[in-house]
Image (tube, rainbow, N blue to C red; front, side, top):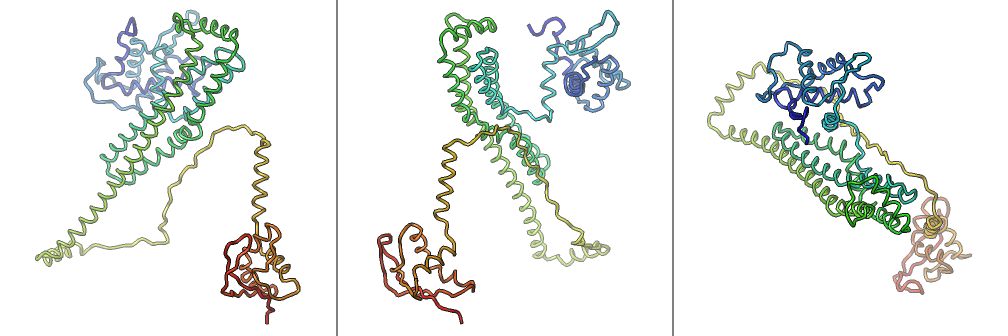
Length: 475
């Protein structure tokens, strides 16, 4: 049973008007004991814990509530309240009181249940980057390690990672729905377009780009599903002796999964496949739908607020028109003139006015990819692409050389007499009309193009306009 012995009223400190302060005390103590701020060389003494609690009590607010059995309003200072919080956490099982029989010193570490329940309270407001999109690749890596080395702990790790994939999808969908509700509440409270747009873009920069964008593209479960299926197929095709050895070791390590007539190895492999299928077919579409709903709701709210502002400006114009049409406007304007007699209008200097642009932090790409050499097929494809690009490359020098060859010793040539010996000549012949434009650079004689009005054909073109090219010298 959970609520037994000292844990019978485990959640009592989290009720009443001081519950937010107690939560802040637990968070700060957890950071001092288990995070990078902790000094693992020694445990915190009673005085250090009271100082930590006093600091936390000044941060957190006191809520208005009549619940709980704590002495309301009886504390003369933060230290007295810190002592009461410490005694409450020890009494109801969040902390343990340990006495060293040698040095007679007292320490107050977290109990196991207290530490497990405090951890989500710390992570709820944590700004640390959580690479939850890594669980799919961790599943694949652990399965590959198990297939190559045969260590059953790698299979257990892959099984646990696959469970977190579905849980992470559910967590992200719930976060999107919560963000959508918060956006609506912020708009209802402030009615400011700028604040609504700032909240939306802040979420897209700090949450969507680092995590959700990777989950939907580079680290999509659809991308790794086939690879995980292939590795599971390799494991199932192993020889029976090896699989029997794995089954025996799994039964020793995980006796709670044993059941009559069922293989633990097959159970874990089937479970991983089923979780990947649910993540691809159920959770990923649900995440995309939730993201689409969030962006659509933000767009609707921003449009509504913009419309409200535009309506406000229109109402001012309507009032001005109504004032202009009213009969007593002279008297009203006379009163306004008396009230605004001391009014002074000053304009800003344009040189001192500068429009600041909002800085957008570029997302940091934390993906680590191994450098792999190009395969022969890839190298062959690159060479072929370069040859194709060179085959259709055309410049003015090629055109001049072609026309000089076509003219020979003469000064005039007809388009039907242009030589066609290879593909290069065919490409240049199709651009022969550009000779007039190329010769306009003034570097030498220019080419005059004259259309005859007739239509010709050859073995490559069914119908082309016939023209003559005549070389003329500049005056």
